[in-house]
Image 1 (tube, chains in turn green, cyan):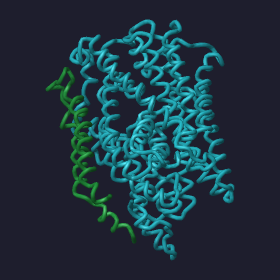
Image 2 (tube, rainbow over the protein chains, first blue to last red):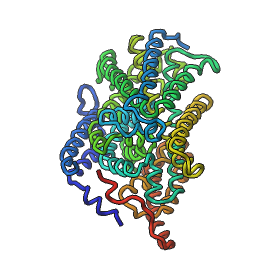
Image 3 (cartoon, chains in turn brown, green):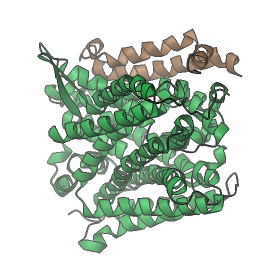
Image 4 (cartoon, rainbow over the protein chains, first blue to last red):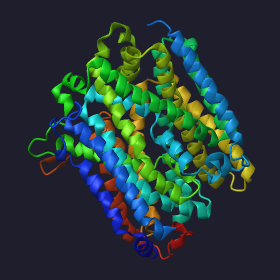
Length: 71
Length: 514
């Protein structure tokens, strides 16, 4: 069996950051509201758009944090 | 029908002429021997971070997306925003999983997911199942791209009976077919850069100019009926719209990267690092997709469906006409030309990549595997070029002679079918534990049950799964891939017990790393 060993070798705790962004947008009770609005956008819309930006930042953090181990 | 919009049409034709030229000269870009399948069909695996960004973006955010997501917002409201969590879920998958597949593909010269399955499991029938699923799921997707072009051509006032009315679409198709044949993947890669510049320009103009005309986002959302503004809060005994929203996002994200054209885009990258960097950069597209979904609400606020001159357009194209109508309603003719060209070119790029991906699958995993095992590299590349033409021609015939709803329904089924390759391809990157025949049975059950659910639900994307009085409406693809996985897990020890031979695997653990 060659399954388990590469998983351990590749694993980094930084990957847990990915769970944050997934949970934040996949649980509608967190954001299914109109108020507070921002620039007239209901919360539901600007919250999810904001998470696109946060998700990009988190992915960039993971990229830089795990880069040295790979290069 | 409305008058022909000559200014818009002229700009549209000029931009199309430009990308046609670009598509042909792209053959000389990072020059390679186009008689080799990996040169024609993967651009020689030489695209760096930036080109990969445009190519994968051009792949994933298609013209149909730009029309259908706002159309869904226009028609159904808040649920259309599932496209945002969907794209957010994509990037971790891209970051973690795809460098692995790039590495193993690079090592063994795989150009399709079926190639990988063939090498990993040594089972040509499993590889055939994956190749057929990919080809069949891709065809209606290409047809929908042509529908996207059809909508904007119609919106510029070009109409007619019979062949004359279809002529513009046929011309666009011939352009697409010709440059794909001659330049391979280099053509959509080069054109994707122009396409993105135009799409960004259009998207930003739409989210800035239109709200100013309509009196701001506050006014726009005030015009949206309350039932469309948010997801319906689930009642007792059901996960309601919440479960549907989340499973649609996750299921679509899992399906996306299994589509052959996604893999083609990813395998053409020059390194696994280029893919990881892209995972952090691609959210630029997600943000734009979110903004475009807002355009659907602007169309509600502008009341474009009540404008008399758009009556025919809505009758022909239904809600898919919302975006073209809003563009015609809000912008001067010259900008309408740019915006429509953006949508039209935005259809050509993914259609080209999709037809190349389908051609790679047919040539590598059906023709070479089952029909002509001894064909030379040159014959293989030539075969792929011909197949890319056949695939596109099929999509054209589809678009011209079958109702649009048929393509939409088939595309929905395509998503359910393609996700069934998840256990073999994605989980296969991490473990060789599964038995290949168990995977094949899981695949067959997933496809059958998924298709049945879609038909029973009259081609709704969700299925109201009931467990002991508790109802969980969710994306059919998501539920059926779980069923598929459970079957593969249960049958693996059973099949292993029956067979005495050790599992075949031409890959080793080190192949999955840089």
